[in-house]
Image (tube, rainbow, N blue to C red; front, side):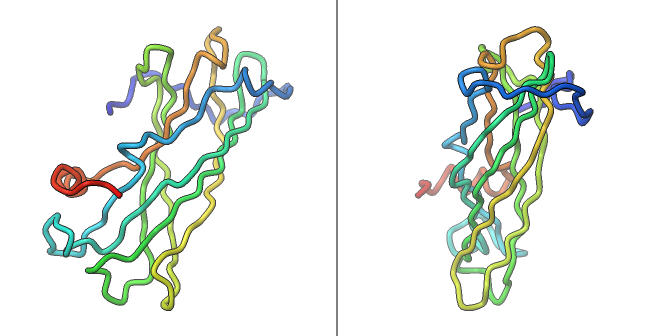
Length: 169
């Protein structure tokens, strides 16, 4: 996915806020093909034996508030990390996922990357976190319901190659 030249995310605080009805909020969804990712141990090839960690975007909850010609979008995303066969004694994984705003034609209007750090206790195989982000989305005169918010892992070249050869769970 390519990043569009226009910036639809804004960090400016809107002066007026009003609750937006759920139907007036952009729809938020995790893209199934990008809901999982693999991180490989250093020096390992993109094969199952080389997987140090896997990541899973489990679910997303979206709420928004109106602010003139913008909405303040609040996303709570559950991200799970799991040790793979090549994890060794590593107890944490750093993953990157994106949040993109798309128009009715699915064209990407904006895309931002977000890091997430997951500590996995020594006695556990997996752990998860709830990642909370808030973004201002300028509407540019469009109804908020005409926009979509999609999430997925930003795949490394190795992870993309891995998933070409191995099915996702």
